[in-house]
Length: 118
Image (cartoon, rainbow, N blue to C red; front, side, top):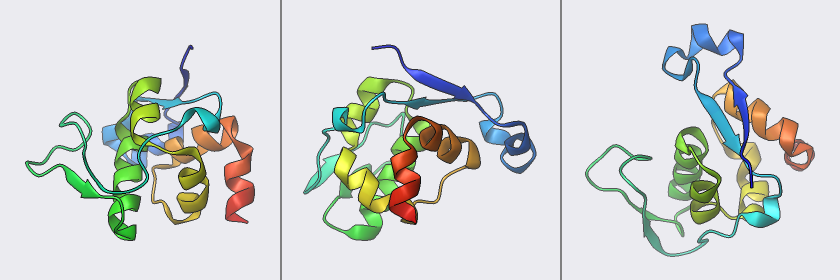
């Protein structure tokens, strides 16, 4: 599969200079996201830059935090597939705090995420 990528929106460059020029990776189908939904996982250091990268996905706030980190930092479809679950992403989408460029890229590829939020 070829990743779908979108450049950071021009408006994001002023608000989020750390995202300027970065690409957002999305998947073609949410059904391809079959990552863990329960239990403790350890995210890779490349995605979470702290010593303790263990996340309890059964804790709602930590699940949101993990999804935000993966959506912001993933550089490959494989990372998205490994760490995200499609139905869970749809369920938590309205609660995620994401840079505008990330949210827009995912909504362009998956308008159903916006409908889930409505």
